[in-house]
Length: 197
Image 1 (tube, helix red, strand yellow):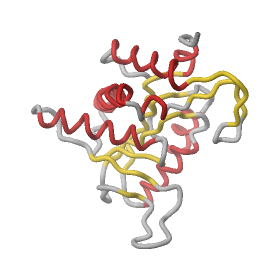
Image 2 (image 1 turned 30 degrees about the vertical axis):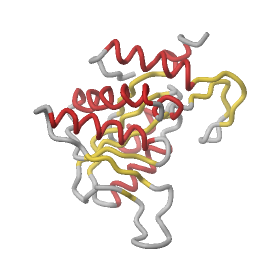
Image 3 (image 1 turned 180 degrees about the vertical axis):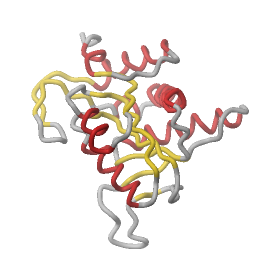
Image 4 (image 1 turned 45 degrees about the horizontal axis):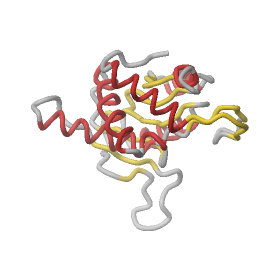
């Protein structure tokens, strides 16, 4: 499991928030169609101000630590959206303070629009961009693989996948094998489960 090494106190706080706000025990059918006794709705953390202030800087640090140097970050709507925007915002703050250049955020639609420009990618994405695909929770890797396919079809170069949570159920390996890109997660399901009451 690849986790960022920087900002350990912030990462610990993110894991605590995910356990407190996003993880639930019960019987659930996941978007992959699998059933699970654990549901992690990372949006309950990533869309909250406390979570946004953590995932942006942590995600940016993870991307920088991986050496990906993307021009843009984005993924399949809706789960990836807050992560992409938080990382883009954190990068703008870093750039304004004299750091590395800012990265742009974008969204990948689940299907192309049927009107207007009929595009699948929304936002300031351009062909040739180096892209870090972002994801809220990786289970099978299907959403990230869809986003990778859309980005590549639009002329982007995918340099890696950044997830808030890896459920540790084979999705990371599927992405690495099928798309040939590395995966970094800010937290693993086991770390979150260890904090559940």
